[in-house]
Image (cartoon, rainbow, N blue to C red; front, side, top):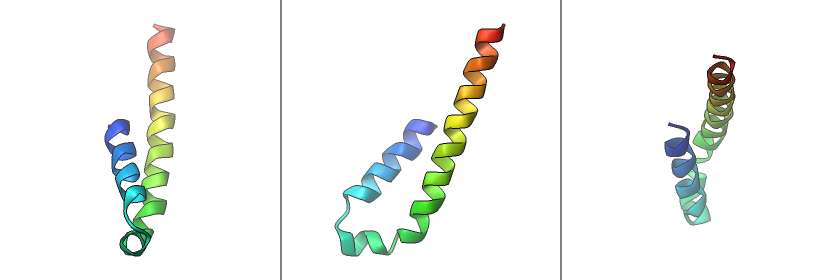
Length: 51
């Protein structure tokens, strides 16, 4: 899932600037989602290692 979100963010960043501005409100939301997914991934890996 993290891969999908990061790929979407990369595609938005690759857009021409004028097109990307219409998606500016999504940038913050996507970055926030990526950070939350990274935290979740780290917790899941820690749980896996603890077992």
